Image (cartoon, rainbow, N blue to C red):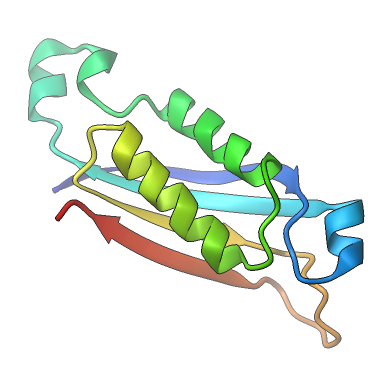
Length: 119
């Protein structure tokens, strides 16, 4: 299976279980791996025959900035299912990073990854 990798889509979101997270917001970073067959797009050389990664990035950003979720797990699943429904993908892998999570010990990043595919 062929794939498109879109890394580092960043926007401010208001996700989290604490009131201050929903009030103040924080950066969220999303990586997406889109699995699809490039055969038709390669033959036609037409963006309509693939997953337009500009549109994918816009859709990801709208999820980050949209309705708040308590858990980034819920955000990641919603995003993955939406992309799978909206683009000609066979599967999608979404990683949501929350680099400023309210963790009381030094850390570099916290992230969740989900993988969804067509039945």
